[in-house]
Amino acid sequence: MKEMLARTFVALLGGCVMIPAVSSQAAAQTDAPYIDDRSDPAALIRSLYSAINRHEYARAWDYFGETKPAADFESFAGGYEGTVSVDVETGGVLEEGAAGSIYYTLPVAIRAEQEDGSHKVFAGCYTLRQLSAQTQEPPFRPLHIEKGALEPSTSDFDKALPSSCEDGQMVPERDTLLEKARIVFAANYGDRCDAALTSGDEAQEPSAYTIRYSTKTDDAERQARLFRFLCMRGAYNETFAFLISDEDGGVRQLQFSEPDLDIHYANNDPEGELEAVNVIGYNVTDELVNADYDEAGHTIISHAKWRGVGDASSSGTWLFRNGKFVLVQYDVDASYDGEINPQSVLDYNSAP
Image 1 (cartoon, rainbow, N blue to C red):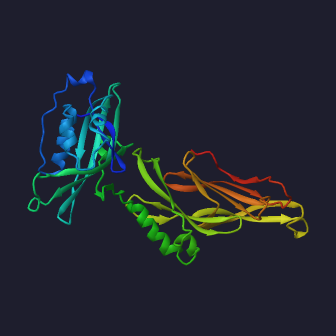
Image 2 (cartoon, one colour):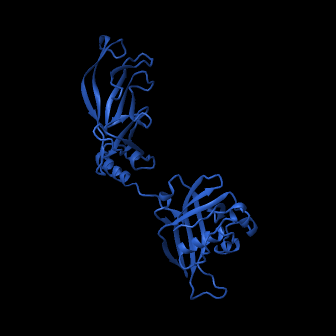
Image 3 (cartoon, rainbow, N blue to C red):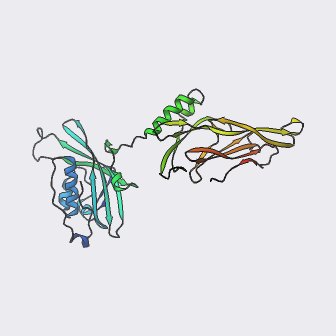
């Protein structure tokens, strides 16, 4: 459902609705159809925008109930300039009866063309009310707008329309992959992680990232979702688990390779002189310390402090390559000397 319209900001019952308008120069060129139809919520919204586009502001004003869209009609009528036209789309209506009235909530998206040729997209919800026709006395009140709120949207117009509305507010789209990640995390880590951090008052929302990539054998763009869950918290270290989506729509936990280190100190005293740090093999872990995802570098980086002052530590870097996170660098500062001086024990940091 599309009509050519224009916009302005109008306060509505604590919210704002973007109502299009036409400049005086564009008004002469406006040839919007006359629509005055209160038979259903979508028709009424089309009628509202028809009135505004045709500069029939008294008609537009009358589509609202007792709560008007501006302090007075003059302010309402004088607030339209800067927009040439607007495309409007409406979605599925939600209906609810209450005390002699029927309330409708309607998703709406608008694309406004500005005088400079740019476009802006807005999306939100209108709440409309129909008083019982059988119980009314004159003057009869038909279906009218109770309130509305449209907000700027970063989506393309064809994707901006809210999927649904409740109580006049947009219902956030369900993140099904995040829901799956929560289930997998609870099943795999429920007994291992601090319950206060995963389900209590201190629980943190998992971080979520979208990774777009292609493989060596296929240039087609693929997409993965990465989720980071806080598991444990100590005095100076936190541990995290990472889960990732697969191409079949499932979610699995990530495993990370780490070098197995053989560290030698003079007189076998960790406080003494560091003699050697050797890699003698590899281990696998599914938890990383003080870890985060670097979106720019497509890497997960961890940094584990061996004691609070941070002079002894280990750090790993795992690069996302061909759909997997691969260990490319590992640094170790094994000397408890009060200085921060790590050395690389493994460095394959250049991606092919």
